[in-house]
Amino acid sequence: MTFDEARALFPVLERFAYLNAGTLGPLSRPTLAAMEERLRFDQEQGPDDEVVTTDSEHPGLLLALHVAGVRVRVAEVAARPTADALQAILSCITPRTKLLALSHVLWTTGQVMPVHELKRESGLPVLVDGAQSVGAIPVDVDELDYYTVSCQKSLCGPEPLGALYVRDPEQLGVGIPSYFAQKSLEPDGTFVPADGAPRFDSGWLATPSLAGLEAALAGAPEWRFDRAVEMAEVCRGALRGRFELIADGEKSTLVSFVAPGDAAKEAARLYDAGVIVRDLPGTGWLRASCGWWTSGEDIDRLVAALGA
Ligand SMILES: Cc1ncc(COP(=O)(O)O)c(C=O)c1O
Image 1 (cartoon, rainbow, N blue to C red):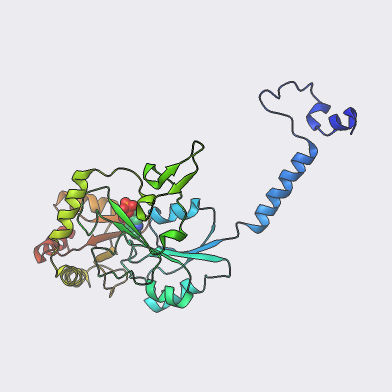
Image 2 (image 1 turned 180 degrees about the vertical axis):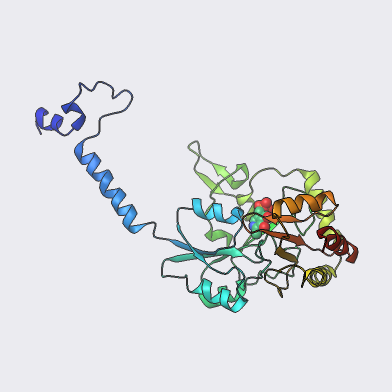
């Protein structure tokens, strides 16, 4: 290639004496063409791998799926019976699906998702967001592949503690390695992963928090699950007929219902009346979370404060 041919490759040189490669080098026609082609390819193909989730996931799961660089297919399960939810999720599976990722108990409606049936029927890796299940309903991870635990909810532990169950840790790469991830390290950062679970540790955990969690776990009575679900049913019974219940009949501890007015304002008003529930943004619903510690008097106070 002659100098004139090489120079002709750069459109910018047709207009400018371009003397600023110290900041940005000029882009040649082949470079621009390659970029355009790749962009077209990406728009047509999309990322190859897919993950299937539901339309009722918490941002805690959904945001992580979004940044994973895979295509996220969303199954419509909100307020559907369990059998329908199962079919809706299964029907989103394609040959490209690499993971099913969903909550065991939906934070919005309290529906219990058929996570074990999904594993059995699909045979795919299943990641379960256990934020609203662990400590609230009996959980057996059984053949599930990944299961998250939030300790500050129904386990009544201090913030910010959580856990991740991984069925086969040797198959999982370390995405965000902390100091604890390695047992030996090269000058360029290459490392041999630590044995077992510590390779996934995110950093130091405050020992007072861990001591608090141990006490919380030891303090939960063995009748906790029966009592929690029973009190949720008492709560539903007290609201039924006066308010529209969402996903009535579920066996979880979350009781969602249509707020009598603006949900956020109602939640604030209830707080002033000494009753703590939360509103679910974008739905007009309030959510009462019952636990083994919930009393009939708590439910009476909710009903009275609602003015029902
Ligand atoms: C279903 C679900 N997933 C995830 C989260 C986030 O939990 P954490 O704050 O422990 O990450 C919540 C919190 O409300 C939740 O309800």
